Amino acid sequence: DAAGIRLSAVNPGTPRADARLEFCDHGDLLGDEWAIDCQGFTLYVDAPSAPWLEGADIDFTSNATGGQLTIRAPRIKGEAPSDGAGLVERVRWLIESEINPQLASHKGRVELDSIDADGVVYLRFGGGCHGCGMADVTLKQGIEKTMMGRIPEVTAVRDATDHSTGSAPYIARG
Image (cartoon, rainbow, N blue to C red; front, side, top):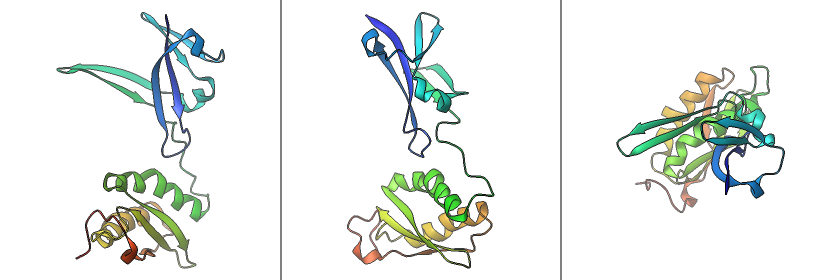
């Protein structure tokens, strides 16, 4: 007999964070969950997940195919570093929280190689971006614009990748 539904945070505080909602039996409960009585069921919030799920909203919207469940947890991925944080920390946060999720649609990613004294950021492309014929466009029109717009100390973004070694580019170099 089902005890209810458990809500937990998976990989909290990281750009890969997500909320998990699953049915649970009494034997699945650890005893430290927060129990919330809802209409017809009990929602159990995993105790270690609670700070990451603070302020979360769970909405169900009916539609022609049944419905859509949406969980919004504004704190689950952690918080961006303050403007007073180090340049490397702020650049890494932007890469992991905004740039790499966009590149993931092409199975690509970038990682920070270095930042020089003049504020030039050097990145290495990986996955589908490694060897991609559009990497230069992605770098200039996407990544560099985003980085320079969000982090004033960044003066330019350069590619430190040897694209000739890319084995599975999203778009082959011509």
